[in-house]
Image: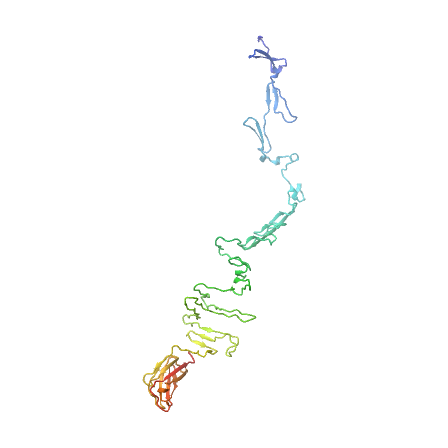
Length: 488
């Protein structure tokens, strides 16, 4: 091995390709030489543009790198950071870019747009992001009229809605309070404001919360949805119930019924009472006809259909008085045709049952068509004379039989007695007849007649006279009387 001593200094800058370094492989004891210049680094720049990231070499082995700094006129738009793995990270923060700092002539950015100078008097069309219109009406709404133009619809009224029509949309005015927006194919918009309708079966009670139900002019309430029967109202609130299949309906009155009315249980049909003035008139009127006979009214009590029960009765009652008033009467008032006392065609009281329970036939006659029927007294005032033909009797009845005392009355003799009778009046018409005994027990030539004597309120006198040729026997005769008064 060569001896190393007294060697001259060699700087890195003066090395040439002729300078070598001795190298030995100790494993193989082989010797080698290594060219010294090949150890030193070299720099090769690639690319035709850009800034070098180094500043060359110093003393052959020192590589001079340049620092990287991020700068931008938009604060924070460009940043440089050292990544955790050692590389340098440059970041562009787009949100921090200030386009006003950009040069529009080279970058294509606008810091501001001046429509006066950039667009001028030309209306910016829809294709370029404009509206295509020079002005709009206040409170109006723009819509796409077609692919290249806009139209406007005025919306100056509160509650207006925009509705499609299949072509140009329309403004739909607000509806009436409490109405709901409903699909209606008959309108241009397919919509209409209407009273709320229930078209599905209810699963619970319908509570309208004090609001109204408008069924229109043909709507009905019934059990099967039929269009010809049930309850129906007209615009005035008059009600009709029944089947209109034959004969139609009518709304002549507040309550109209086609068909029968069945009342269940003990029921009153009552006109509402008033707190002042006379009560309201209530009338039950049969049907009139413009081409035939008028309709009759039949009031019929119920019949017993089994069990041997009695038939029902009908009571027509007058109203009760209060205080010093007069109780109501019951009267029959047919229309007069021929009675000259009343105007022809007028309703008149033919028969009246008054508050004293008196029956008055005012204008006509009491006519009995059956020969065996007539006036019947079920409570006659029959009485018997006690002592003689002058003994007074008392009989408070309109009719009765007085059985005379069983004494003889001489031929041509008279006897007079007083009948005390509360029904008798000073102007009463009193009819008397004599009921004689059987011929076999009387004197053939005796005849008793009876005459009315003095009359006064509360009594009348009867005068007896034997107009026969002989005295009567002692068999008791009977006097029949009937009082007809001129006033009550």
